Image (cartoon, rainbow over all chains, first blue to last red; front, side, top):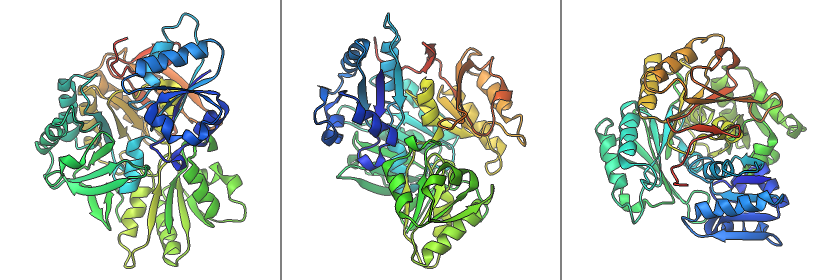
Length: 241
Length: 241
C-alpha cells in the first residue's frame, strides 16, 4: 500500500490520529528533507528516503517502486497532501503503472486552515485558494483567477505568495485586488504557522509590507465585511446579532 | 479559556492531536447534538451542554457565559470550526463582552479536504469553497461567486449543496457552471465522509443525480484538466510527466 500522508502545518499537535498511526506502522517513509525533519523523532528504526526540493517526481517514483514490491510505504507532505502537495502527482504516476497499486490519501490540516485559526476566523464565508507560483500554472491563468476572486468578493488565501525567484507576484496580486477591494481591506499573514518561529500579523492591503512575506507564509485577504476585533481577524458568517 | 474545536469530519481518526487533548482536559463541552454524538465516548464525567439545530447563537452565548466565570469550556464544531463553523460567531460574540475572555481556535480537517482525499486528489490546483445555503448570504451574491468560479476555472467545492428547504440551489449552481464548463467536467461527491454510511461517487456535471445529494454531502466540481483514472478524481498540479 502507498500512503500519501499530510502531516499538517508543522507541530505534531496538528497531525491527525490517522496520519500519526500510518507513520508509526509504516516502515518506509519517503519525503523532502524539511518534512522529514518535522517528524524526525518518529523515524528511528525506519527506512527513510530523503529527496531535495523540486525532486517531487523522483520522490513519487521511488515510493511507487517500493509499493510495487508489495511493501507499505508512506510519502509525506506538509499540510494536506491534496492541496498543492504530493497526492495528485503520486496518483498521476501510480495511474501510469502497468500493475495497479493500492493508494490511500490521508488528509491533513492545510496551512490556510491553521493560519486562519491562529488569526481568528477569516474563512467563515466563501473563499478561494490561489497559488502565486507560476512554475506550473501560466501567470495569465493566475491573473484571471485573482480578478475573479476579487470581483466576486471571495476571501482569498494566497499560497506560495513570494520567493526570491518571484519577488513581484504578490505586489501584482495585491494591485489586482485593489481594482475591486478597498485599500483598507483586512489582510492576515501567517508565517511558519505551527512551527517554532511562528508569526501572525493583521494588516490591510495598503499597509502590507511585502518584505515580511516569504514561501512559508500564507496571506489571507478578507472580503468587504471582514473586520478586526480584540486582535482577531473575523469574517462574519452573516448572523444578525 | 474558551476553546472552539474542529472535530474533523466524523471519525476520531481524523481529529488532530490538539483537538483530542483539548476535549480530554476540558470539563465543560458545548455543542449541537449531532456533534456531541461524534465524541460521545469521550464525554463521560463531563458537563455537556447540548443545543438544537439553528441554536448557534445560544450555544455560543452559553459557552461565553461559562468562560466568563473563569472556567475552561470547549464549543465543538464538525470539520474545521473556522469554515462555515462556529469560530466566527463565537469570536464575534466574545468581542461584544465587556470583560474580554481568552479564546483559542483549534483547527480541524474540513469536510472538503476529507472528501477530496477519499475521491483522489481533486484540489491540486486553485480552488474555491461556496456554500449554497442562502439563509445568511443573499442568493445573488452566491450566484455572482458561482459565475466567477466557473469562468476562472477554479475547482469548486460546494458546501450545503441541497436540502429539503432548498431543493433547487444545486441545479441552479450546475446550470451556471455549464455556461463556462463542459458537461463532461468531472464531479466528485462525498457523502457522510468519515462517518459510518460514507459514500463516494465520481460522475460528470451532466450525469449528476441531484437526488443523491443532501446537506451532509460535499460536491467537488473539477477544472478543465480534472480527469479520472483507476477510479480516482485527479486535478493535475501541472508537472510534465
